[in-house]
Image (cartoon, rainbow, N blue to C red):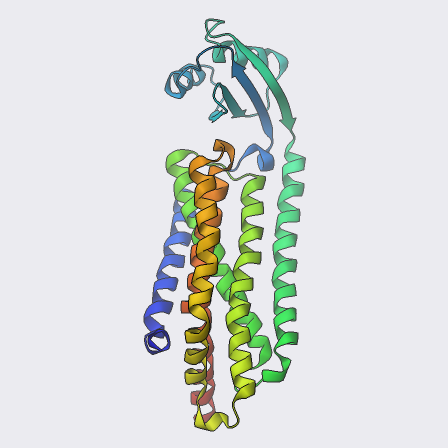
Length: 303
């Protein structure tokens, strides 16, 4: 199959995209939301027409409260994310949002999140990702224990983790660009998106790996059909199904992005990118890496 024939090109594309994503992360950094660094979240709804976001941003800059992020919500509301505010600052913020009562509004909610909550969320997010990665390696190593030749079963799990890192890093790179140019913030929905990408992506990779396993077990004499041919044959049998399955999910996510609420747009975009690159890695990265590992083993034995 052409994917195995040109495997180095497809792997090179993945390496380049990951490198660009990491570069954007180091250059721009992430715009950490109040869920992690602590702060105040104020939601208001206007009784009549909602002022433009540009006009409000100019008024808010004059307050010298630091960075205040405005997000439209519903047809008449805004959510203002800021550093922690005392009572006087909170009152001043509401007055500014109402343009000194020229645009009457109603405060829907005001929540203050301490930095200790953010640290706890960060710790739990890191622990969850590490535990999921270890569980994936153990599961794949156990499930593929009967096909340890020519590639050891634990290497299937390791390659799956490499693919998962690819599937997460590239959407994170996209989010970093959005964060830098459009003010997107890293919040709890971001963590949910990353964990969802991990689950969706690994399932696609396991489907293709399982096809490789079945073909390896069905070969009477593997010497007559080398490993790269078996992997290529497995891809031919499963890549259309993999693409179609992912496409149906991507269409739903795009509908959520274009027609859903503002608060979930970046979440839907992250998942869409994760599904797209997860499908790419399952077909064009994980399986070619298996062949590269097998070729490296052969060269190592000869040397």
